[in-house]
Length: 87
Image 1 (cartoon, rainbow, N blue to C red):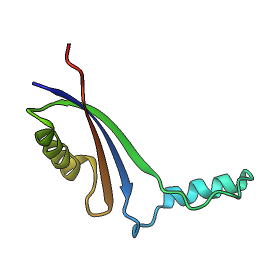
Image 2 (cartoon, helix red, strand yellow; image 1 turned 45 degrees about the vertical axis):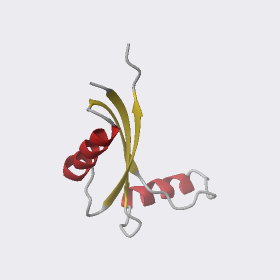
Image 3 (tube, helix red, strand yellow; image 1 turned 180 degrees about the vertical axis):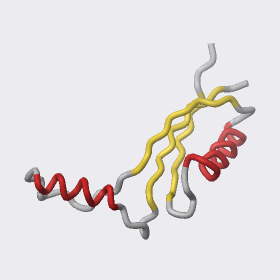
């Protein structure tokens, strides 16, 4: 069965306030980096999985994100999927 490498980027929806991003932006400003605009903090997840084909892998990843890896009420996610070479 093929193996896939997935990279998942989880970010807050634009309408959701990001206090962590605001704190980082404030910290950078206190350090003299006044040229930094709004900051949004997110999550980055890497995983590998086995699936019959790419479509099945994407379906599984969507379910994983909706059920555990992201909070669909306040977060968006983006998946990058790559087939791994088999030996």
